[in-house]
Image 1 (cartoon, rainbow, N blue to C red):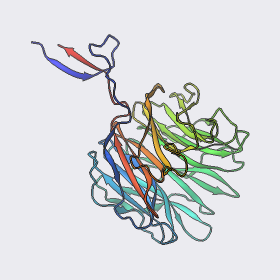
Image 2: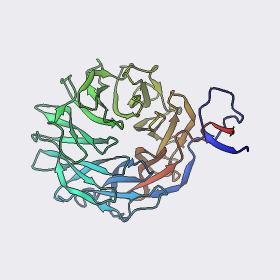
Image 3: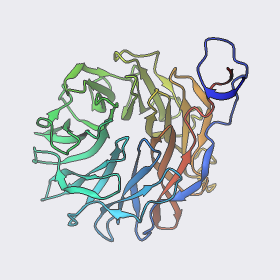
Image 4: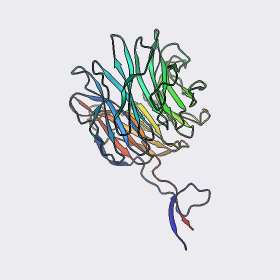
Amino acid sequence: MRSLRVGLAVLSVPLLLPRVSSAQGGPVGPEFRVNTYTTNQQVGTSVAGDGSGNFVVVWTGGILPTSDAEIFGQRYAASGSPLGPEFRVNTYTTGLQRTATVAASPSGDFVVVWQSAGPPLQDDVFGQRYAPSGSPVGPQFQVNTYTTGYQSRAAVAADGSGGFVVVWQGQDGSSYGVFGQRYAASGVPLGPEFRINTFTTGLQGSPSVSADAAGALVVVWHSDGQDGDSYGTFGQRYASSGAPLGGEFRVNTYTTASQRAPSAALADTGTFVVVWSSQQDGSSTGVYAQRYDASGAPAGSEFRVNSYTTNDQFGTDVAADSSGNFVVVWVSNYQQGPPGSGAGSEVFGQRYETTGSSLGSEFRVNTFTPGFQDAPSVATTAGNFVVVWNGRQAPFAEDVFGQRYSQIVPVELLRFVVD
């Protein structure tokens, strides 16, 4: 008896059906507003997805001078439907709570970290853990143990078992460095906080961190003066034990002017990609990337992500699926028209296969185009991905918007298998 099955496969023999092409960057449903409370400004987005396709968005709401700022979140099902109402993350409400980021484990646990204004001339990094149901797990907790000066610009990444690591820009004496703290899935710190950068002259800051399922890490940041001319982008790899893998390394090969504000995405295969903003595309700032193999060696040369190069392209973020396919998002100024035409900044994206081959052309994320759309964040959600950003769609207002997408690689290899 013969049966006909349709399956997904990567073949070493000719296919009975050719690869099917599909428009890249195809959205799932329309863009949507995340925040339900719309008074004052809602800014500073971050998004994370779990293994079932659910995702959570966090942001800063209630910006000065009208009020103090606080951290809010909204959970979503894989279908894009909200899971409950938006919720406040911080329990301490005095002063400014801002610059939140979120990370989720495959099972749906998630953790939010942010900086909180304390005594004069001091900020600290705090966190709050959540169960997959969205219920807080324990009280909010302070991450940094060194409390002199400003500890800010926190980022967080989660591994496959719910363990997580927080990195931040910390004031260490008269300058700034990059620090980290690892945690078990129970929320217990794994060892003391540690400094990540070994070059300590000048300012090292704006860190990004990514973890694989086993808990290995890659941390990237920018460093002032280290590459010989203004800011450069640097990185450090870590084993799942927390031990450094080799020394810190410079990511950018082009060193003229500034290469800064990096983001990293580490796949479960051990490969990773770093993206950053660089003043080298012939018209102010562009978005550049460098791929790495599982040993930490560069895989090919650095490459430009944005194809449209007029004016500035900046504010980049990157996310990868478990196989190493990745998507980059960024802000582009006046791509739809010159100043005075009604155009402003918009959010664009570009998808890539694990080999670094681009999938289609760059695509615009936002559908509402007047004014300014900026500050994007991207996350994978069970093979699909979601982008969130800040949009100014009404006078004197700024809100959080999102757009869901199908897989980074939208069409797999298909074949008929005849038994």
